[in-house]
Amino acid sequence: MKQVNDLHIVNFDVLFAKDDRVCLHYTAEGHHKGEPHGDIPPNGKKAQWTASALFRVENGKLAEFIKDWNKLSIWEQFGWPLEECRTQTNRSKS
Image (cartoon, rainbow, N blue to C red; front, side):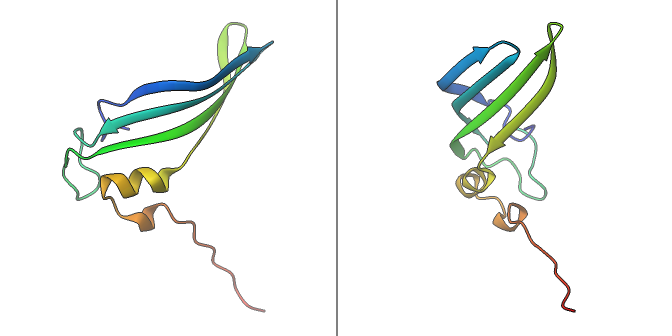
């Protein structure tokens, strides 16, 4: 996130590895001090959130990466437009 140029991990809440897999759940935080978010200039607001990540390693290199995090919580804390986080489904009626 170029908008949050001081992003850092606060705590590794869960971390384990077995064979070629690594799983972690962590708490991170940062401030909107970097690049603008669309038309919103850096406002200095702080956000803290949790996320989970799964990694698969192959021949000593990262082969797969999956991340899950609650964007809506972050956007709310930064004061960014919440509609950017919402999923919209367009369904046609038959």
